[in-house]
Amino acid sequence: MKDAFFNAAKKDYPQLLDGEITVSGTGSAMNGLWTSSGSDIDVVVVFHNRMAHNQHQLIRQCGKIIKGISKQGTLCYVPAIKVPLLKYEDSKTGIDVDLSVNNILAMYNSDLIYTHCQIDQRFHIMSTFLKHWAKQVGIIGAPNGYLSSYALIMMLIAFLQSKSVLPCLQERKLRSQTPRTVYYPVPIEELESKKRRRAYYSGATGFGGNPESKVYCMIETDAFFESNLQVINDNYMTKVTNTSPVGQLLYEFFVFYLYEFEPTRQIISIKEPTGFTRKCQSDKLPFSIVDPFDVHKNPGRTVKASSTQHKQIMMQFKAALDRFVK
Image (cartoon, rainbow, N blue to C red; front, side, top):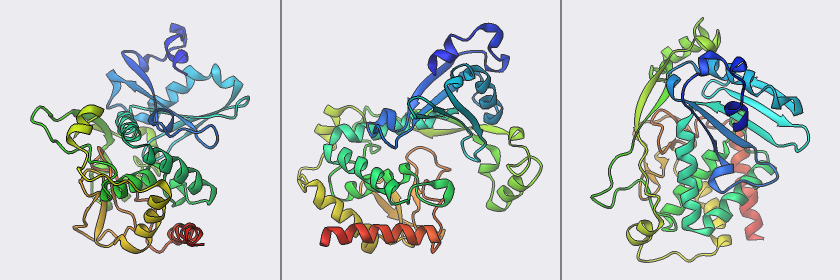
C-alpha cells in the first residue's frame, strides 16, 4: 500500500495529492491487538499540504493511485459521515484494508493503546479476548448501532484504571511534561449545534447531498500521554498493586457494566485517574465515552438507550457473566 504512493509514476499521480505525505498503519495492526482472524488493517495517509481539504475528494484521488494493487482484489469507496474510507479486500489472503486520509488522531490512539499493552499483559489478553468474543456474539459494529472495537477498549481501560491495574497516562506527573499540541481536521458542521448539524446532513452541502462539498477546518488538541515505560513505572504505578488474575478481572468487568456503572450519572473517560467522571448533562446514551484526544467525538454515541442493539449488548454481557457463575 505504501509502495503504491511512493512508486507511482508522475503521470499517474493526481496533482491534488502533491506535496509531503506520510503513510502509516493504525488500529489493531499497530496497537498490539491484531489477530490473524477477524482483524483488518487500517492505513492512514496524511497529506501535509492538504490537511484541511475535503477528505472525500482526497480519498477518491487515492483510489486512482492504488487501483494497480486492487487488481488482486476488490476496492470500494465508503462515504462514511465521520471518516470516509477506501476498503480493499485481497482475494488471495482475504485480508481487509481500510484506508483513510488525514486521520492523524488515529495514529496517537494506536500509540496510546500500544503503551497500555506494554504496561500490563493482562490488558493485552483481556482486550484480545473481548474483541474476539464481542464479534462472535454480534455486538461489534458501530454503523449498525452497536459498539465499535475502539469503544469497547476504552471501556476496558477505564475499568482497569478504576481497579488500579492501569494508570492514567494523560495525567502530568512531572514538571518536564508539556502539552503536545496537535491540529486535526474536522468538518465545520461537526462544530455546530445538533439542529444545525441535521440541516447540514439533509441539505445540499451535507451528507444527504454531496459529501465532497463538505468544508473542513483545523482544531487544536493536546495529544500528550506518557509513553516512556521507565517513567511510567517510577511515577504512575500505584504502590498497592492489583494482582488479580485475568479471569477474575473479566468477571468483575462484566459485573461492573451490568450492575455498578451508572449511565445516567457517569461518563467513561480514561483521561481521569479513576476512569470515570460525572455526567454534567443527560445525553440519554448508555455508553458516554470521552475520546482521549478528539474533544468532539464520543466513541459510544452509536448505541442508543433502550434500542434493540443496547438490549442485545447487555444480554450478551449477562450471558458471559452467567458462564463465570456456572
